Length: 313
Image 1 (cartoon, rainbow, N blue to C red):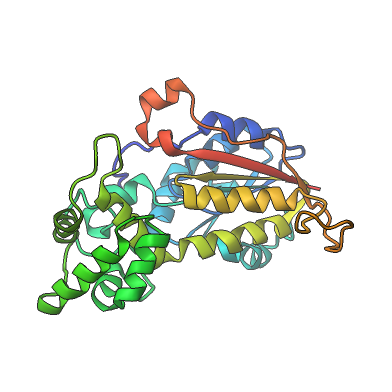
Image 2: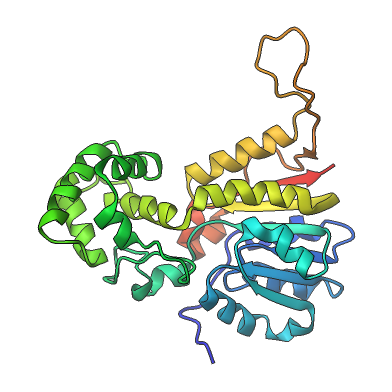
């Protein structure tokens, strides 16, 4: 039996359950980032007619979800794969559409807590960071073999580090003497080069590890492809809910949803519309939904969570 690392609390659970539960009819839910299956479990419990197609690229997550969802096994199909491929995976399962799609983006708490996965600099482990351990690219290969230019780009674009170039230069000089092997070693080196963050700011190793994780798992491209796939797979009137945890992800989701809901995407100033674009969706809630005080007190991970939704026309 697979043992859960720790009790997992899905973020924004009430909001996700209520907003997706309001879709009528709600018979097919696709959870593209299944994790432990916490959100899906709540929806399955409330909606006896609901069937779940759960996707995750982490086999360990699928094993945990299988246990967590065992009471609903007859209504669940769990697949190993990437949510960007949801249309192909759904078609193989016999679905040509879904009533609701949920994407909870980013690294999960169990992945962060398990040192051997290498996601967190707070736990010493190998420089891995792969969500799908069948892939070849690891954080070790990025740190020890990427060029200085590519490392600077990753730290700047994915970690939003103002001293990205300085860190990339120092890393390439240091690895020439001895390759980096573990997360604690890399984190200590980053703080030596960049110094410690000011009080109230994210620790700089957090931003470095975020950047490496995004590169290893192609997370932003996966998100862009997944949003397009979700819009195509939703049936008319279906709802997409996306939870993000940092500004890079949220900007992509916000831009995608707002453009999908616009009638015209021509540059400002044109006297007439020439784009031929028509709205494909509406936004049931303007702006972003964040955690309430009670949830923040119980689950600090919810502090950075942002929920956005759109309904397909």
